[in-house]
Each structure stands twice: as C-alpha cells, then as structure tokens.
Image 1 (cartoon, rainbow, N blue to C red):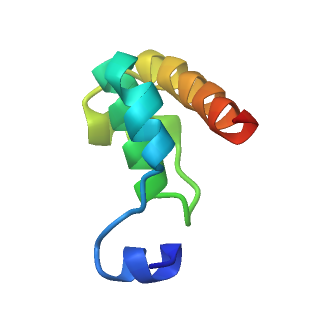
Image 2 (tube, helix red, strand yellow; image 1 turned 135 degrees about the vertical axis):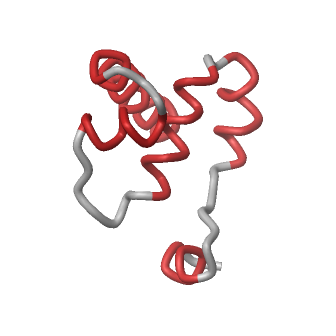
Image 3 (tube, one colour; image 1 turned 60 degrees about the vertical axis):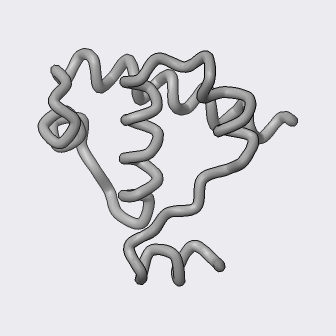
Length: 78
C-alpha cells in the first residue's frame, strides 16, 4: 500500500523501525506529534493548529516538532 492509497482509506503508514526502535523509549507527546504530522504530511500545518489538535501549548508543540525532526534524521541515517 502506498502513502496515497493509505491516506485515501483513512490510514497512515508508520515505519517498523520507528515502532521497534524509537517508540519504546519515546515520550508519548513526541509520538502524538509524529503520528499527527504523518497524518497531515500532504498539507502545511501551523504550530497553533498542532497545539490545538493535540491539546498541547504552542511551546510544547515547538519542542515536539523539533524532536520529530530529530527522529526523521535518525530514521534516515539507519
């Protein structure tokens, strides 16, 4: 299933490596932000929108967004 097909049926693909190697040690808010960003990857989003959707402050959202970009780099290196 490719990303476009997954999104059209209301599903998002999540890397096995993320689940197996990162998620067990990750803070729940980082996982929430990562999954929310995957779900909304096809469009531009704002910190304010993410904060509202995930019940975080904008400051918390910024911190988690930065953490998610670190996760992306980690996943790409391996």
